[in-house]
Length: 488
Image (cartoon, rainbow, N blue to C red):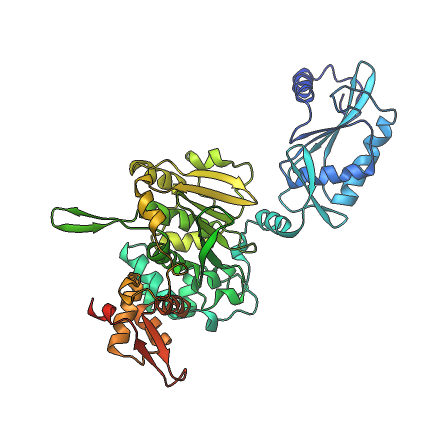
C-alpha cells in the first residue's frame, strides 16, 4: 500500500507496481536493493550510499532471504524516517507503506544525487551489494566525478609559467601541426595564450596538474611518481639484472622509453630485402608504443610509477589506475566510448597525433600484434591497475637469451663492442663532435627535448663509455672516449 492509504486496490497502476515490486524482492539483494528486518538510524548510511551511487530501494520489514517479516511501528516510521533523512542527508526520498498477508513493511526509494552526499561528514557509496566508506584517492575521484572533473583538472598549487619548458611546447606544435590537428601559426602565441588556448588553466587562473605533467621542466618537483620504470628479469621475478627509470614530462616520455627499450632491452634482428638492409624491432613497434601511450594517459599520478618488466619470453606493462565504474576488461576489448582517466592529457596526446579519440586504443594494440603473427596481448585488472602481458617473438629466443647487458659485460670488454647509439644519442654525439664545450642546456635547445631528456641520454652514453666530461662544470669540455663511434 502507498503512504496515504491502506487500500490502493482502486488505483489502476497499483497491480502493475505491485508486480514490479514483487519481482525486485524475489531477485534478492543487489546493487540497488537492500533488506532490513527493522529500522535503525545507522541505515541512513545505506541511504547515503545509494544516493551517491545510482540510487536504490531499502525495504524495512524483510529479512535477508527476501521474506516479509513485518514491523509493528510502520505508521510512526512513515513519519519519522523522511524527517531523519532530510535532517541528516539533506535529500528527499519516497517512502511507501506496504502490506503482504497482514505483515506491514516499508519501501524507501532513493534517487541518485547529482551532488556528493555525506552522513556526519563521511561519504558512503553503494558498490555491488555492499556499502563502502570513501576515503583517500577513492574519495577524491568520487568528488571529482560528481562535479564533472578529473584529477588532471585540479590546480597545481605554487606552479608558475617559469616551471613550463618551452622546448616541450615546441615539440608538441611540431607533432600537432604535422598532422594538421592544430594551426602552425598557433606556435607564435606567447606562452600564457598558448596554454589558455589548450585549456590548461583552471577557471581561477592557475596551471592545471595536466599542464605540469605535459610541459613541466621538472614534473617530479610537483608529482614524485611521474616516472616510468623498466626492469630486465632473466630467471624470474627475483632475478633483476638491470633497470632504468625514465623521468621528465609525459609528452616526450614515450620517445625516451622506446629509445631505451631498443638500445638495451629488446632486439632488432637484421634482414635483407634484395640489397636493402632492414632492422625491425622484434615486436610490433607501433603497437608497443600505443600500449605505452595508454599507460601514460590512464595512470593515477597520485600512485606509484608505471612499470615495464622485460623477460626472455614476455613483457609485462602495469600502470596504477582503475577503469570507469561498471567497466571490465571485456568492455575494453569491444567497441566503447573514450573515457580517459586524465582527459586533459588525453586531449593533448590526441592533438599531437599520438592517439585517436574514439576508444580504439586497445583494439589497435591487439590488431597490431595479431596482424604481425603474435598472440593477442592479455589485459587484466590487478593490484589497483591495468596489466598488459605481451609475448616476445619465440623465433628470436636464441638471440634474446644471448644478449649482453651493461651489468654483465666485463670491464675489459674491447671498446669495439660498445652498444650502438640510439637515434637521439647519435644526434647528441654529432653535436659534441662539432662543439666539445656545448652545454646540456644548448643540446636540449638544439634537439627540442627537455633538459631531463638530455641528462638521461648523456647518462647512458657515459655508461657506454662513449663520452665523458672533463674539468669544472662551467669551464670543462666533452671528451670522446670511443673513437670507433667517431668514425661511424
